[in-house]
Length: 334
Image 1: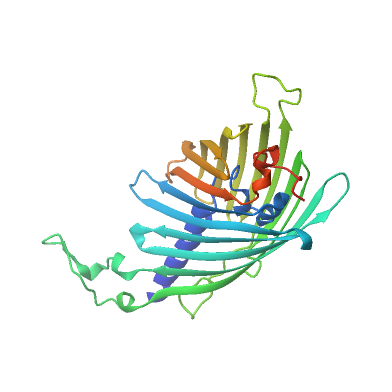
Image 2: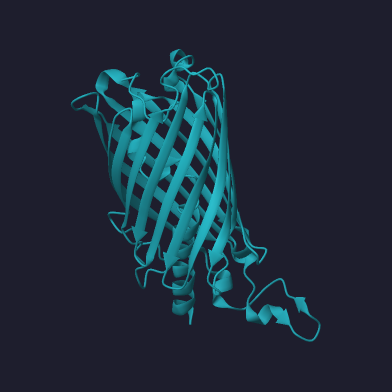
């Protein structure tokens, strides 16, 4: 019985981590979480924080907080990116903390095109907080009360595990086009709580493609000087799970707004979500907002409504007054 309980908890964690924290982030503004090589775009240095909340019709709520940033070493042609993710499902007492460090090297190709290979290493910590679990012998069906302690062996067990993670990624881009692929969990880390068996996290694959166009090339007065249309699409796939994302964003100087669509599918369910996103840049600060809602689903699973806010501080002050400070795909800092 204990073995089955540990396996159930382990598989639940894999499911939540695949369909939660890595699924619903707004990839138009947070591409580095899909492909870490994006940390090396235009050799920029920045720091940011993002909060993501998933709410379900069952009144369950999943919160994720990410602190991230990048430092560019121009003379050595590489960037370092880092992110720390705190992921919580309060209803079940699940806490997941991960930290990833990414090395991105820059190789200049022809016609101002750059190749950005990356290598990521990470560590993670999973924990189930026992006080949030309720066992059968704690329930008193006559009085409807819940006892504060249990004789179940699992109640006295420390449910925690650590793991080491590896990933690789690559991007090719210029000022108009970007294409990239990424592999995560290359070492298939064991996230089991029990040493009696292994619970491997499956390898995941992702591909991303983007296109950006200047829509005010001739300096029309009814548009801001730095006006762009940005289109992005991606595919994320792992064992028994797939996600397809598409985003369209209009950048008007220091302000942007856009739409995005998300389709997810696993063995048991599928869902389609649509969302809005907007951002405002003030000096070196960028504030972003996003919201997703389901528009179609099957009858077995309820997809979430997703709310996301983020803030980025850009340290490349000399880019403030040119289009490199607003545009997604830019090479003027390399």
